[in-house]
Length: 194
Picture 1 (cartoon, rainbow, N blue to C red):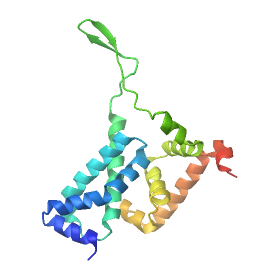
Picture 2: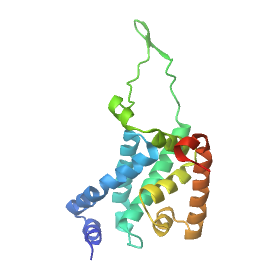
Picture 3: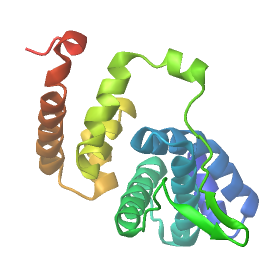
């Protein structure tokens, strides 16, 4: 029995220490995956927190038909897609709006959460172009590209994570690559697209 199987079995029996060990083992990978999908630290943290709550609630039903990591990627992807659906229905505040208070009107102020100068300098043009292109693509294509090219998951693992046949994963991944290429055609000098 491998470490994951033992931790899962103990967690299913109610051992909180085993569940905590399972979280510690996967929290960094889960956060990196969520951050690559969102490019936002707070959103990534929210996705990971939501995912681990779902894991805790559903762990008793986990039967080991796929690896725990693959199962976790499926949950993370679902949390990400659910968050995007909620955002589409959320009301947005104007940055120009003023607030009426007792003493008159006050200009609304927002904290600047953008990266500092060091982070901006470290970011290169290619990464920016790829992120921009990914942002124009449907969420499921983003998730598939990140799973395969960044997280290095196999077709089988993606198939398990997204509950799709392998042929569908291959064709959708190919279409996602072509769509990414189309979005990057304006950056020929960065990527030497032919």
